[in-house]
Image (tube, rainbow over the protein chains, first blue to last red):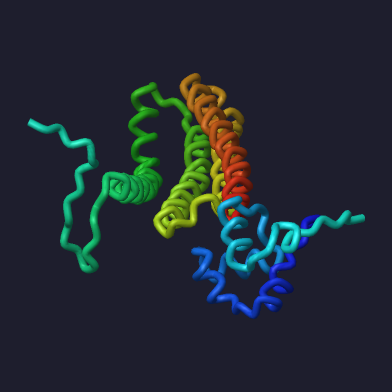
Length: 69
Length: 165
């Protein structure tokens, strides 16, 4: 995908494990791991807002656009 | 007097007790009818020579061998269709609906119907009513094909929805 999800970087910075973050956001651990590994096709704004709220960051810290060749 | 807007549920004691909704009853009814159809086709295969003998006498000694070939040759796709429909219904019961294997089942169903239609035209062309049945079979085959196209798109949409976090 041309949009990269740098969730693990942010999670390491804030030292929050996957299960705890999933619980705080209100999604399942499986869904969060789908998001982390880049298999997700879309993300809801409500989920993005919850992630940014818990990790105290902005969407640009988590989502990155790369041009694939 | 209040008219209830909720669907009627009533608990039925089975081995595992679950609530029988109208949709579940409809699903089991479809399975039952398909199973009966399967048995009916087999019974018709066994009784066909006798029936054709009576029909042949009724038509004054008409040679019905090509009609017999047409009907027997359509029994095999018929049985295959019944088994495919049962497989499809079981998948629906398992909550696997817009899935690749169901698309393959629908494709098989449409090809069976089209095969039966063409085969009726080839072997039953002397009998005018067989041509009507052939047209009906081809029509049903076409409808199933369009439903298969719809399922293809539905799989795409479901996958998109499932992978929306």
